[in-house]
Image (cartoon, rainbow over all chains, first blue to last red; front, side, top):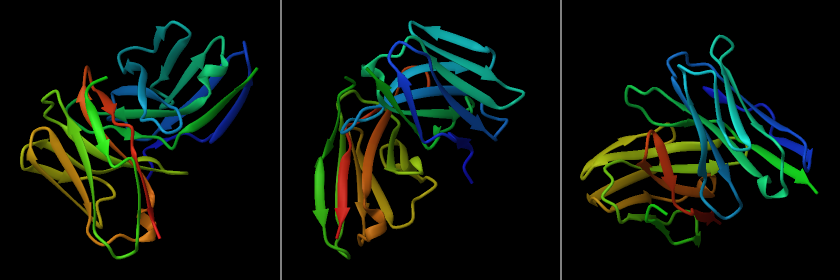
Length: 112
Length: 111
């Protein structure tokens, strides 16, 4: 049972445009969400996070939006750069003491 | 870099043989995790540890065992490797506010 889902396995975007990566979750007990970025032959690295008490968190070109009623979060990258080409995983957990549950990942390709 | 290393980086082994992967951390973190990454499945938790000799199962623990005799080392053993265990394995430690830091991974091929 996949509690965190990324329904788009891949996304291709032109350099300079916006990239939007989506993530849905089913467990209403999740209250903290993270995005990780993974390059080939490397481990995932933390990108940005958001608590369920917020609906938006911004860090430079990266913004995460959370819609709790829809159990949906999205990562916006503006403007997209070729170096952003990677696999992006969303992850969720219950802050009461839990392990991260990851989505299936979305491969982003930013075309020059 | 949180000082987490995995070894080996690559391994090819035959079906039915035991295999041990090692995760080593240098910063005395209490929690350590083993994940596997497979296309279409993302990252799935195999086992985790919350201290020396304290371990527990994740969602895909069948066919795997772990040991943690020292804070710095977390070992993952495939007791009798099968082709379905061909995967990329990542070790992680808890760092920061709910975040994990991952190692660089071990690519395991079972032939």
